[in-house]
Image (cartoon, rainbow, N blue to C red; front, side, top):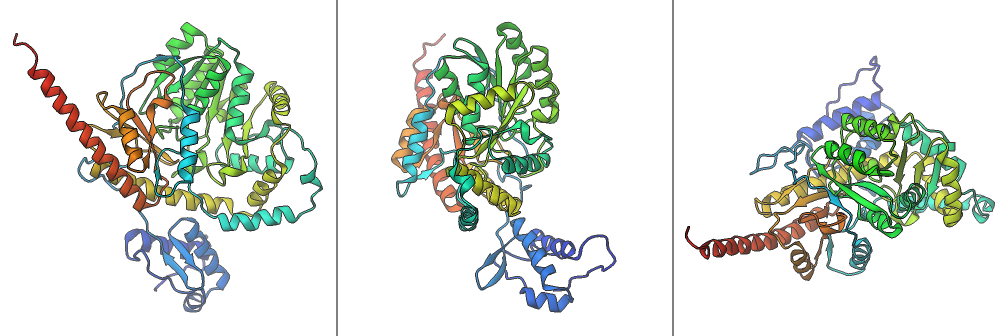
Length: 504
């Protein structure tokens, strides 16, 4: 293990050690499962302090390149490169052939969010079902979180026992401000409201800006939970179709002009369900249109923390007119059951939304807030995110490879740069409901794409890729066999129909 260190370099020694091992692992010279030198051995061999080796290994572990085995040392992790090329279709992992028909949908109602949510919860309690349908992340670092929760609850209980301010605990809001600063969004604690997950933030914002009969714009497809909230208050919805770059802005302007909607709901980063992330140019143009037609924006970026790369600053970071309400959550990055989210609200809207929050549930659980705050204070959140991102990258690539191996050529899909989902687009002739029903009979639960449209959309499936690689292989192979069967049936029916046509 020949590590050449420069004692006079501006780069810290631990970083030089980290970079050395990182190069060896990524080049394949150190293989998955291979053991790294022990901390003591390496510190003696290259004559550095043990703490320096610990720091270097900690960063390698945070990058997902190595893992620690209790009492045995550090080992090279399984790494799936993000720039691999799909084998037979020759599509880069950074490209997507997602290009559905651009059809605007005017609200017809009928979202099935509740049914899909309950089905996913039931699947969690049923042995043997592979659940590709859910919006839940897999659990990671739970043992560590348990220790941190104990520390949070070991502190004086006075603050946890009492009712709290509706906008949330000040220390947590300060910590979130620091976290958002790294994402390019500069806000004050006095512009933050702690919510019960992002779902409450969506509900508060929609109910604040809209009344029964008002028009709202959403992307199609979009998050079915938001569609259900809009339907519940009696809003009328305009679904602007998604392209591979995001919402179709030409159609958006057309309907901003003709219908004068009261709110635009958008998911700019790691869109649910497609996984698409919009560019800075797209965000700037969307904001410009919203300003021109004086239409507020609700930016729901629940998956922002799961980016594989450094993401683009949110639309809210570009907002100088208090037009954008920004929403996110710890449910997708830390623990769903804590139900801690947050919303950024600036200007005159803040006080009114705090009042609505107080009427809704007084405040978010002080215990949940204390646990999240303690976790952020521990300094382990960034490392935790890096591990999640590495795991999800491996799982995403495994699913892309499985899709290519097992799905028929007629099916296309998006290639997200993070998050939990990709979106599989089926030909119009495929009976999606029957496919989902038959898949469930084979213990594979998928989210029927119909739920993500405010009316009749196109056949599609949202697939959660945050499973282990074995489950992905089994589940996608089963789905692929089903799709190939229906592809053959559709082809046969087409031949029969053509044979029955009279000769011209």
